[in-house]
Structure formats: structure tokens, C-alpha cells
Length: 324
Image 1: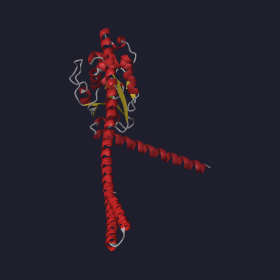
Image 2: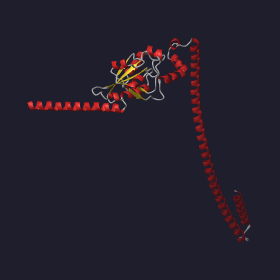
Image 3: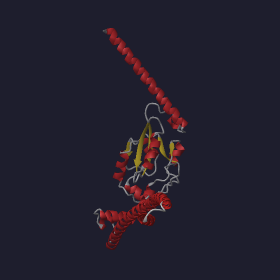
Image 4: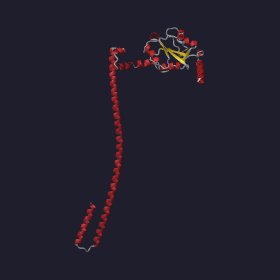
């Protein structure tokens, strides 16, 4: 029993040593990769996840934001991603109004799978005190210089870049919060009309009484145009079907007429041949009968008057047959 316990303890100790060795090896690998990525400051980090910080406004959170956060999260094999979000006061002061409130922007980020922690009320410019407070090892952002709207510097990340703690991420082309807002502004009337149809009031949408009436008239005209267009499409489909049926009927009719004429011609030819054969047979029969009558006449010159009458009757029959 004691031997079994000893063997179990030895196995557990060996397993723990192996796990410690793997953990130490993993930490060294993290450090090496960090140095390879230009992050020389990560050399001494071997006992904990590397804390990476990304900040922004994140208004109308979209997949471009998510992709940049994914890059920040994957910048190290064992990264802990903190995301700082500026509040409404700072944002409205230095950038302008947002579509979403600060609480909505915080909550959107909390539901992103790459984010480990959200820091509300983040500063507009990252400072050394802020890095120390949150134990931040690296700051991740795209490399474009962002001028400090407060006038403190030409690039809000200049301080971090000088420390060698900046991790560059790539922007996603073709998508941005400004682009989404421009799409809405471009089709503003359409969105207002759609929301009016859904039951929103003009006060909710911030439009005047005259504009509301004009939009409702336009909405009615658009609905009417759509119905007319649908009706035209249906009529067009019916006409197309009728034209197709007519074309098929014409093709079939031509084929039927040609077939009928061929059959008619064939029948006429057969009928003419039969009539011709019948006439020839009758003529041959009549010619044979006439020859017999002539022979009988020459052979009976000494017959009496009754025989002459019989000959005349036979001749009359022959003539009648010829006429028939």
C-alpha cells in the first residue's frame, strides 16, 4: 500500500515538473516571438500573459473594429486584451457627436470575443501613469499618426512608440464608422419614410410638419409606382407567355399545313392513278366487246332482220358504256 502511494506521489511530482517545464518553455516562446515582432520590451515577461491595450471610440461597432481587435489579441500567443473606450464628454469635445451612447459602446465591446476587459472612461492620450495603473505591456493600433485634438502633440501614440511598446495593426479597407454614417445620410429620406411607416412620429425623427407631409406624399407615390411596376411586370409576363404560345402555334400550324398538303398531294396522286387505271380497264373491255361485235356482224351477213336489230342494240350498249 505504501509502495503504491509512493509511486503515485512520484508520478504526480514528475507530471508537475513536466508541466512546469512546458510552461517555462511556453513563456520563453512568447518572449522570443515578442522580440521577433519588434517588441523587445517583452523579453522579461515570462510568468504571466502579456497585457495588450487598444483604445478608440468604437461607435457603430463593425467588423473593421473586430478585425483590429483580433490582430491585437493575436499579437502574442498568450495575450490579455484590454480595450479602452472614451466617454461621451471627451468624444464630443475632441471628435464630435456619436450615434451610440458611451454605455452602448461599452456593451458592444463586452460582447466581442477578442476582448478580455473593457476600460470605460479611457483617456484621450495614453500616459505613463495610465500604462502603470493597468500594467499595460503594449499598445496596439494602426500606424497612422493621430493628431492630438487637444493640441498636446502631433501623434497621440508618440509617447508609446518612443518606449518601444507600440504594436501595429492593419485597418480594414472599405469599412468605417464614417462610411456607415455617410450611407445613412445619402439615403436619409428613405430611412425617414421607412420609420414613419413603422409608427415613429415626426418629433422622434426630428423633421418638420411640412417635411413629414411631403415625405408621406412621396411614400404614397413610391408605393403607387411600385404597384404599377409590379402590374406592368405581370402584364409583360403574360404578353411574353402569349407571344411564346402564338409562336409555337404558328410553327405547329406551318408543320400541320405542310403535312396536310403532302398527304393531300399523295392522296390526289393515288386517286388519279386509280382513276386512270379504271378508265384504261374499261376502255380495254369496251374495245374487246366492240371487236367481238364487228366479228359477229361480218360472220352473219346472211342473218335475218332480227339479228340486225340485235347488233344495233349491242352497238347502242357499247356507245352507252363509252359515254359512262
